[in-house]
Amino acid sequence: MQLDARRRWFALVVLCMGVLMIVLDSTIVNVALPSIRQDLAFDDASLVWVVNAYLLTFGGFLLLGGRLGDLFGHRRLFLAGIVLFTLASLWCGLSTSQGMLIAARAVQGLGGAVVTAVALSLIMMLFQEPAERAKAMGVYGFVCAGGGSVGVLLGGLLTSALNWHWIFLVNIPIGALVFALCLRLLPGGSGHAAGGKLDVAGAVTVTLGMMLAVYAIVGGNEIGWTSPRTLGLLAAALVLLCMFLAIEARVREPLMPLGLFRLRNVATANVVGVLWAAAMFAWFFLSALYMQLVLGYGPMQVGLAFLPANLIMAAFSLGLSAKIVMRFGIRGPLAIGLLLAAAGLASFAMAPVDGTFVVHVLPGMLLLGIGAGLAFNPVLLAAMSDVSPADSGLASGLVNTSFMMGGALGLAVLASLAAARTSSVAATGAATVDAINAGYHLAFVLGAGCAAAAALIGWTVIRTRQTVGATNGDLAPAE
Image (cartoon, rainbow, N blue to C red; front, side, top):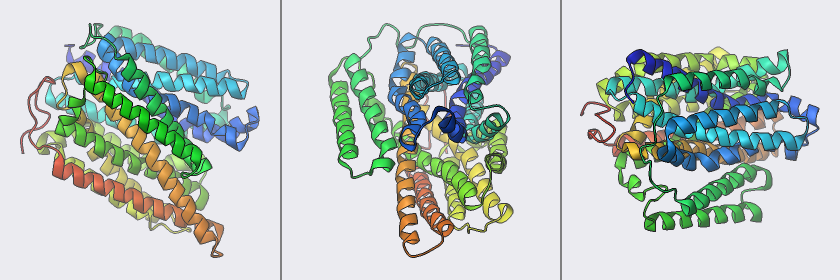
């Protein structure tokens, strides 16, 4: 997949436009939930499925989507995912009933999983030269890390200026444009593993196992983490995933070669990804809640509050990150970035109920923006560095699954602990806002701990010297 330089960068922009649609959709809906609830007469129990239906299929199909890209061509799967996501967005926007919207959201999640799983592989194949690859991965990292807060701002604008239907309908022209440009910019071709067979038994067990795990996680806060249903679902998911591993150990052409986990950087990057995602989700969702419920910010103010962090991440993505990685390798920037993120979360853990933006919000946003800008690119590079082209889609799906599951599980656990802390403080007679803030403080401290643990693991385990493998070249100079 050798294209001239100008065409490669145009292709990257188009790929990131497609990924941005998916990232935005994970947060843009949250702002519109009150309007959706009123319009379609949702109750509290059913409203959560507007979000959960998407997460269920998105989390369940990431690995399978990545492998299908390896077998049948990443461009072909990317285009199919864009079409599916765009049509599902139209379905969502035209929904007039609860069942219609929830079903459309589930199809959206499937399309989003396919796009996300193969986009990283396409970028890795488009950019073979180390410096260009590092820069391209920085841009991709910014879209993934900063797109969520853009979704909050855009969701507030569309919902207040028009109505909730437009948070979905806005995807139609974007999806059509991405599809048309991808046809022109991305060369066709079969997948690197073309001619291989799909491991059907492995695909069924891992997809069902992941979907059950996501279902148990998103429902854990509602019905309790020790409830029979939650424990039963987690146990069933564990059994299915164990069956998947047993199948992969024996089948001739596995969906996920277990030897992948013998690659130290790949395995370590996925562990770091789980912890990092837990910290990032704690930052984004809990700081947004702190600003809304404690400081009294509106949706638009919350979106603007994230702007400094987004601008910093953009600066890193558009050149700084690549230069730092090429100069210092992936291990140092990863560890320093995660430590800065931990410091940012710790600063939020000290924010009072009468906090001000400049003193109590901005410092944490700046630290987290710098930390995310430094760390995201090295995590992605480490996750893909030692993988052969035939398994690039799988590795992409795997690291995205790690981020998604780490974020979902981390947020669910931290939110549960925050709620328990809030309840215990409220029981002492404290004011409601003080109790809520105390719960967020605990969650921020634990999120900071996750980021610090990820920094320690990255620094001590990730290999400092990259091998020249099938991915064509060192990602960073030897240290």
